Image (cartoon, rainbow, N blue to C red; front, side, top):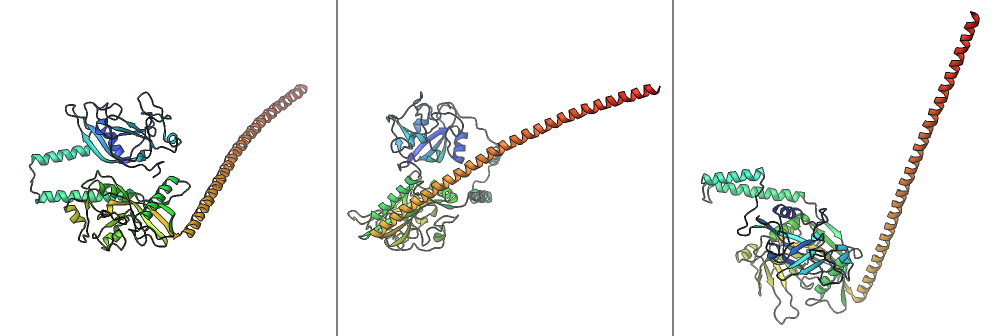
Length: 500
């Protein structure tokens, strides 16, 4: 959402390296060579659109060309390249290996701004991205090229112990009946371990929060969401004559726990390789009431039927589910006053096409039919009709932005836009004043530090001079006492000689 251009998601893309590196990437995310402290190839993260691009017999420089005779590890990723710079751009400079020598800041300053570099090849394309957040690892694949051998695996003590137990069970010919007590105990232990691991992982994640997106600091995100809102307003029946919609607030929804469940459940769909889709949801009466368990879970578990206008022409047209669309009128958000909508990332997987109402649908019946979601397309020739999508698993949707907007008459909307512009200008002026004040405070602090350092140096010099002068005085006083003692001794000697 912070890219210079909206672009689209490229999936799948492939990244290959050693097994350990791929596991670290899967756990902590990608890093550029610059962040790792190395030079690398132009300090860019490079992903290929074809598996052959990362095989040893593929083109050099794509990941595993130095791993001959070893098992390969491959990451299958979703990539958001944004607006890629073409190879033939005059401002693009290549190194001796044929890779671009640039950075993200340099790309953003060229023309209207770029986010990555596209290197087209004969059989695949190479994307050079400079923001590691643009790539999301989805699958970790271990494979071997026939005849090249395998890599020696370095297993820990725990892995060795588990292997020994498995081998012992095989040698003892453990009962194979699924209904046996041993197998049931094993399944219970596995389920308990999985639930405990999930609960522990969720406890490690920070709580959810809302982040206000500023129009001045993040203009690209604001403009794209405003354009999406304008498209939703125009889609379908649209607004009544003389009305206009103005987005007044944009909030980013940050919920790591919900995001983890979303990507985890998306990987278990019948068609997990399908692209995620950005769709709108009308939320609830309190669309900002998001919790640690997820945005939709509370209303879903309560057994409430979808409210009217929550994505269906009539209430619950496709059963108890979560309804999404691209139209504000479909979602019932075209009335006068303040309105809310959610911009969500939805994992649709394999969608069932539905032309008529099916109120008995639920998650289990959809799974038995081999589908992940439902798609009700608009009828052919119906200009006011609208597509809608339904999912029955709350973890298949990840609310990303909360859009707050006003629907008012054009004159009121124009005045509202003017007020928003004034508020943005005032906020910008306040930000500048705050920055100036902070700079003045920093300058004053720096000057105070310098003055204190100078005073400390002067005081140290004074103390040193005083110690030196005191030492000289002590030397002179000692010398004077020694002279007086010597004179007194001579005087006593003279008196003693006279008495004799």
